Amino acid sequence: MTELKAIIFDVDGTLANTEEAHRQAFNYAFQQEGLNWDWTVELYTKLLKVTGGKERIRYYVNDFLNEEIKQDLVVKLHESKNERYQSLVKQKLIPLRAGISRIIDEAKKANIRIAIATTTSPGNVNNLVTATMGDDALDWFDVIAAADVVPIKKPKPDVYEYVLGKMNLKAQECIALEDSYNGVVAATCINIPTLITVNNYTENDKFEGAMLVVDQLGDPDVPCKIIEGEADIPEYIDIETIKKLHKDFVKA
Image (tube, rainbow, N blue to C red):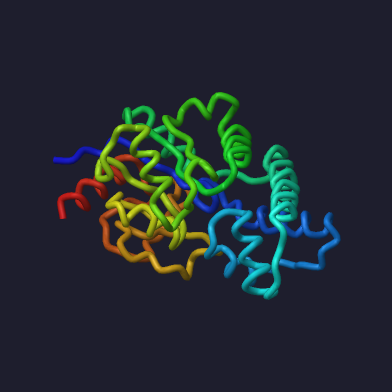
């Protein structure tokens, strides 16, 4: 029987509801550069189909403005946006989602390894982790794979393949915790069992292949709700629930 050995976490929208802060930071960067671009919530929801900040800027300019943009401007805007975003993170204005801190603590106690597989920039990841979990929290993760560690981002599986290789684990020895269509495709296309926790930007995504889709992991005072799939779970998801979901999924 395949035993659960690791949980691989996505970051934006999964560890924390960061997407709104990213959206505001993009708009700040545009204003600083004198651009009259305004990424509304509705527009940003569409833009999130493209992973990676620089890629998202190019996609907007090419597909929505029908224009071209120079690479040096893309880089400048992205750096400005990340500086703004990280300032918000360092002010501790973006808390972890319900259940995340508890699950990480429970995984460590159960000797289940943890890792990160994300398309966001390393500085964004590092600042979020330390601001929400403490200065030593980066050491809890066996691997932190961020942004350009691989050339092709989600929904391609490259970042997950990178993490599996670094951890010397097989796909079905892990669970991916994701929040989006791009995330579930990236993980499930190489057979990593995937648990989805949606947010307001991804609640209408398609999650074919996921083990289970919930609104959040929940906590004792914040119950979770199953959106797609069937499972006998308590009011919130703990590490024993994750182990059972994994066992039932890989056995099926």
